[in-house]
Image (cartoon, rainbow over all chains, first blue to last red; front, side, top):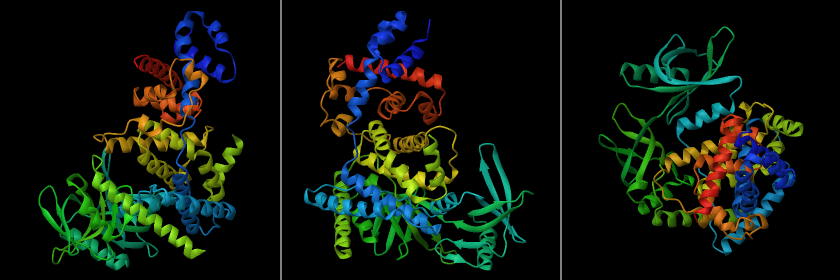
Length: 334
Length: 177
C-alpha cells in the first residue's frame, strides 16, 4: 500500500495538472477517504492567498530604493545603470503614488539600514567575495609586516598570519584611512596597554597558503546599554556595569528601527517619545586613551519588544516628512 | 529554466537589467511568503526589501544547482523571518485576519469546503510555522516538492510528510471553527 504522503502528493500534482479528484481517489482506494478530505485544500489555499499583494505605494518606494542600491553597486563596478525606461517609468509611478499617499494620509514604509561600523566593512567584503576573503579576529601581534589574528569557531580558536604590503590600505575607528605607520602605532600601543582590539581584513589567499591583505581595518569597540539621557551633544548610557558618558559629534551616525539612518535631531526627537524598552542602543565608539573620553561613531537603537503608540506616531510623522522631501525633490527636479 | 539560468548569470556579472528582472518576477511572491508567515504588514514590507538587498549583496556567491533562483530567495526570506521572529519573540502580532483579509471573494473551491475565504486564511494562522512554510511555498508560491525541499533545507520525503501533516492540521483548524 502506498504511503499516504506519497499518494497525497501524487494526487495534488495530478489535480494541479487538471485531473479530476475522482480519478485520483480511484488510484488509491485504501486511502480514498483521507485523501478526499485533504485534496480540496491546496486549491482553496491558492485561491485564498492569491490576492495578497504588496501595497502599490510600498511597491513603488521599494522598487525605487532597490534601484538606488543597484545603481550604487553598478557605480562600484563602473558599469552602466539600469535600463533608462525602467527608471523613468518607476520615477513617474513613484511621483504619482507618493502624491496620492500624501493626499489620503497613507504611511510609506522606509527601509532599515544596518549601519554598524564593522557591519559595513563586512558588507563591503561580502560584495567582493571573489577572489578575496574577509579574515576578522582579535589582534595578537603586528611584527615585520605580519598581522596575526586570533579567530574563533565551533571547534575552538586558531591564529592566522596576514601579510601586509605597501599596497595594503588601513582604516581606524573614526579616523578613516590612515598610513601604515599610524596603523602600526595604534596597534602596538593598544597591545602594549593590553587592550583587546579586533580587526577585519580584506585578504587573498595564494596557492602556497600565504594570505596577503588588501585592506585592514580596526573594528570599533561596541557598547550596549540603555540611554538615560541625550542632551548637549552627550549621551548617557547605562551599561551592565556602569554609566558611560558618550560624546556625540557631527560625524556620529544614528539609526532607529524601521527607519535606517536618521539625523541627530530626529534621533533626539525619537528619545523624547521613546519608552524604556526603546532606549536600548548599541554604540560603536572610539575611546581616547589619553583622557578616557568616549566618542560615538554610530548609534543603533535596538528593536523594542512591543509596539509603542507614541513611538509609532513619531515614526509616522518622520515618514510623512520624508515623503514630503521626496515630493519636494521631484518638484525641483521638474 | 535555461533562460532563468542565463538571467542569473548576467546578474552575477553585474548586469543591472538582469537583476531588475529577477526583482520584478519575485517581489510579490516573496512578500506574500513573508506576510503569511509573520502576519505583520509593516514588518513584512521591511523584510521583503531586505531580502532583495541581501540577494544583491550576495549574488556573487550564488551557485546555480539546477533549482529555480526563487528557491535561493525563499531561503534568504526564511532566514530574515527567523531573525525577525527571534528578535520579536515577545511581540504581540496582529492576527493575520486583520492584515490580509478583505477584498477576496469566496471561490467555488472554498465554498465546497463549507467555509469562507476568511475561515481559511485564519486557519492558516493556526498551524505551526513549519507547516505554514510548506503550505505557502507549495500552494501560494507554487514551488514543487524538490524546490520546497531546497528552500527549507530538507529532503523531498520530509517535505511530503510535512505537507501531509500541514493539510491535516489545516483541515482540523477549519473544522474546529
